[in-house]
Amino acid sequence: MADGTHPEGLAAQTDQALANLVDTIEGCGVSVDDVAKLTMYIVGWRESMQAELFGGIGAAAQRTALPLVPITLIGVESLFLDASLIEIEATAVIED
Image 1 (cartoon, rainbow, N blue to C red):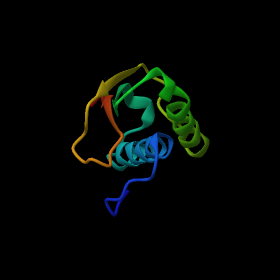
Image 2: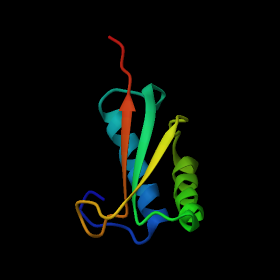
Image 3: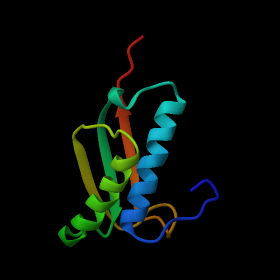
Image 4: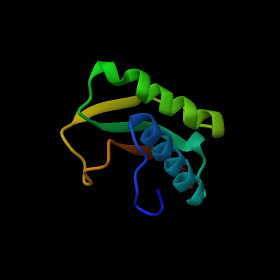
């Protein structure tokens, strides 16, 4: 969040991370249609976390259009901040 706090749980953090991603993309004058791929880094990933991850994606998709692109999911031991459970990276292709 803008104040540096993190929502509780993977679903809430996924929702917030996607909202931040869309805001950043649009703030650069680019469309989510320009996104070619997403990479999600998730702390302690296990298959049992799918429902929570998809819940966060679904919540974000109810508010805004999300890129419909391939997603690579990488389980990691930790992220920069201990409270972070997910980090999402986008690759966009922008033509001149």
